[in-house]
Image 1 (cartoon, rainbow, N blue to C red):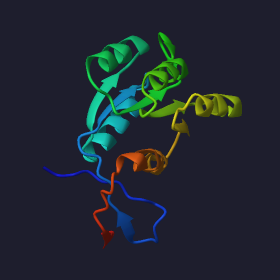
Image 2 (spheres, rainbow, N blue to C red):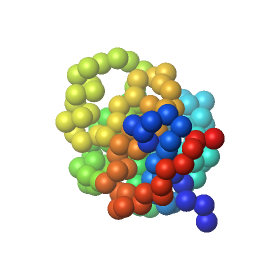
Image 3 (cartoon, rainbow, N blue to C red):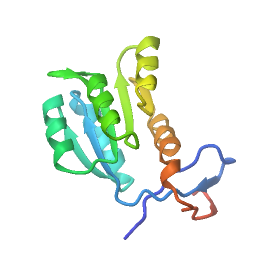
Image 4 (cartoon, rainbow, N blue to C red):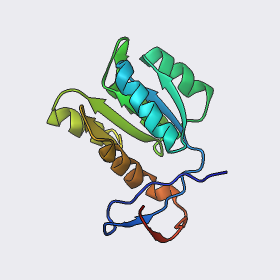
Length: 154
């Protein structure tokens, strides 16, 4: 079994710190099919177990059927608010790694998400490095001393 890792961008260039994220389940809830597919491909390449939903209803169904470690969710969905969905799931599980994506710049929305315990906030379009940084920052409590060491990035 290959153990997935993420690069800690706080280390000097050319170095990385491996964080064990063994078989984390990620739920991506997003209306835009292109973004949903890109995020799904990115997460699968990094060996996450990915589930996808196009609506609040589909997301709730998947969330209730399995244990989810991380949710990446669009703000506006056809049948409700991604923000409200993440707020509820974060209330149920404060350890959940949650990321809200939005197409609009809105400081009050970002503050509301942070107050609710949502771990990440991304304004579309965003670079996948931004998502990586959120995952790394949010995963640190899960590390439990899982440092693999320093190596040259190739």
